[in-house]
Amino acid sequence: MGIRRNSAKLAVALTCACLSVASGVAYATGSEPGKDVQADPGPCNAAVAAADDDKIIEACGALIDNEKATKPDRVKALTARAGAYDRKQLIDRAVADYDTVLKLDPALADAHNARGELWRRKGDRPKAIMDFGAAVKLNPDHAAAKANYKSLSLELERIGAMMAVAGKPSFDCRKARRPVEKAICANPELADLDREIGASTFRSVREAGDPRQARELQRAQDDFIARRNAEFGKPGYDLQKAMRERLRQINGVDGY
Image 1 (cartoon, rainbow, N blue to C red):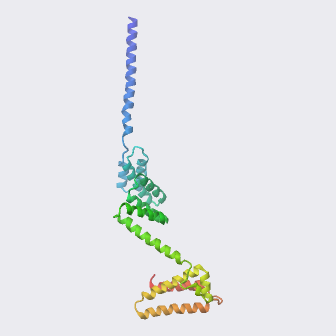
Image 2 (image 1 turned 180 degrees about the vertical axis):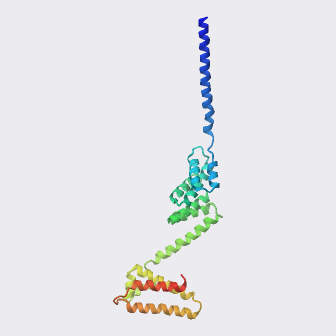
Image 3 (image 1 turned 30 degrees about the horizontal axis):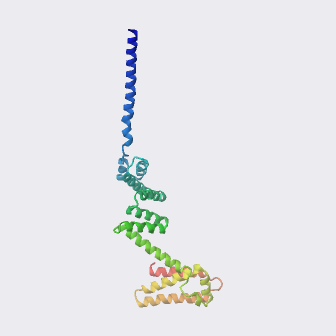
């Protein structure tokens, strides 16, 4: 009888132990599916809808870092955070987010254009023009990218033209005979000033309201050249100062 009672107690104990283990397994199994649930983009979307940049950076950042986030959700979150960084003037961080976006999906014209605008603001025109070009290639109807590409192309052309004439005056230095002309040719800053004076004079004369005004503007320039030639080298005469003053006079006349 004692043996049977002991056996019964042992059986009960084993049963309880098995139930306990089973309960633990059931609990663990019940928590497993949670690991397979995709990350919730709700907080990030809510922050974007509220236009709260701090919340966007926080909530979308959490979604970006969540390994369960889907690729489309991660791209949207990265794009949203890049925009928030941009508005906070954190340009390098915004560029980094667009870099990641384009690694995930290189065919996003909007991302290329947005990153191009950031590169342009940073002063990196070569990278900017490449991004604008990529955006237009991906979407020929992308109005913003087309406008950006056109304006930056014109800007690069102007820079190239300015570089081509940098340090060159309005006249041919090979024909320079006067001491003042030789001094201008020998000094890039004076040469640039002379070229600007010449260009501004030409523009003001061309845009004059009537022939009489045009003649007066040209006569004023001729008088300046005559004084410059006569006074250069005399004590107290500052050629650069005189040229800067003349440029201010012209710009005041023609409105530039």
